[in-house]
Image (tube, rainbow, N blue to C red; front, top):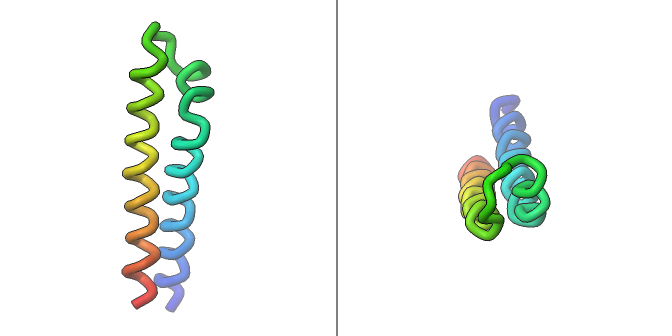
Length: 65
């Protein structure tokens, strides 16, 4: 019972990180990286954020059943 709650919280945090990475990809690229091609870095962060969001949602979904 406690493990299910902990897994839901972890899944929610991972999904939240993924959505934040998608939403703030351009800002994070400007702030964290110093290479010139901002579009390439932004695309990489958006793809990584999408994967994180899917993993977090899958943890929550499969934990409910």
